[in-house]
Length: 205
Image (cartoon, rainbow, N blue to C red):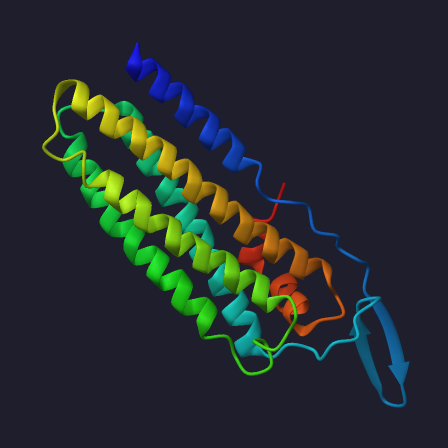
């Protein structure tokens, strides 16, 4: 019965996470011509056009977020499945998750010149810092699984499921911060996220 409850909790977590993205408007480009040249602009864009480094950085932030989200979902599924090798499976998954969180946090911190000063950047960085903080609690609960048996194992797995839910909620907040930035076509940050294919995938409904 307890395993069925765990499985149900994980299903709710994964379903909620799958709908964390938000649609991003795609305004129709307007073409303007001047003597001897033609340029394309998106209505409402007033910020500086992002350079290649800024778009690459934005894409990395989104791909790192997607990878982490998938890994935490896999951890929740492993905890619900249980089994004789669940302790090692969770330990291995946590190693990967810890590395991914570190990568995401460092990527966000290494924003190119002209990106970190954008008003929307603070929300993105704050959200990833919160993911890093919630990971610490998940690490503590995951460490209780290995070696546990019987009722203690079921309890430990249940705690892992709850804590993965917290991390997924914080990751969803990062997706929201990115989506909000994308909607601001007047900022270089927003244009950077909009130009990166990985961000379109991450924020798709």
